[in-house]
Image (cartoon, rainbow over all chains, first blue to last red):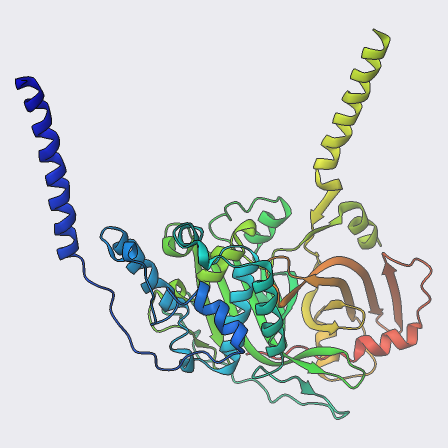
Length: 326
Length: 145
């Protein structure tokens, strides 16, 4: 009898203690900061329905959280995720973005859904109704592709007469990105690793420094060696009368610099973008890439070490040798 | 016993051939080496689904900057053409894939021009050399700061 009592008491005490701590946690935790809806995304009803059901809980100022999302310590993780999610994409502050950015975001959303990266697996485990179906993806895809050509860079039509480019003003000093990456012309002497286009009617040439090229050729980019640098030079597409497209106006040069220690928050890559003829750097603070660039690179380009434009493994060595033979 | 041996042997051969296959069928990621030439310009052909990079030496850069129809003596130009694909990691973007052809234009010290086309797809492709030379000379160096 006595021994039984002795055994039960500690259990009760522990139970009460846990309850107390749990209760205390609730007092300590701060509720999620409420923000107003300043400009909700406008899109066809079926598109909005999917976004509201699967994305809005984190990517908007209109949360519709379950009771267990609001209980500490779960709420801590939830609130942190929401805060980060809003930084990357917020459907309630859609008006802050330009039509071109809206299009870019929709492509990012489509790609995230297609690759199964969003909604997050941890999230759909607790919220099964927010899972997206193949049909949902088709709906998003149809809408996203319909945006192509609206609000983007319009193609320059070259109607016979030659377009003369004024001599480019040379920036007196090489601009520096907020994270310390400085623009440098060296890349113009590097090898071109690939070329690409994007839905925004741009044409892109991607250069790699010798370290990066060696990593590609030896298939040694998991992870990329420190010192690898890749630069993407971006132009507006310019259409010739016969339909062929050439590089028109310069838009920007995008740098990715690998330094695993220096850029820990962004998978070891330092990002920089220098736009226009004055090469003005993108970003207000050193951590700008954390809120923008890396979100897509991390989720969608993991297979190629977070770079999108690694040459495809598609050619045979013999063919290349034959072609390059004199 | 013979049968077992045969089966084992076949299995072994299959295994070896599978291993070879696993080595990506000899496929590699190729970065074109232009030698001493530098990237000068680029083009996109949406009908043929190709993208090209034009490389050249300093004489090539000079000729194309001046929009000459004839290259300066000592010019070397290479036009390297690739087939492009939808980027496997990003819907809405394309990326270059198979190498299709390498065209080379050279002018000697006297200024006489030679042209050569190497093609991976159709060997007996008849090209109008004069037309291709004019085409290569129609490129302008890309503009940028």
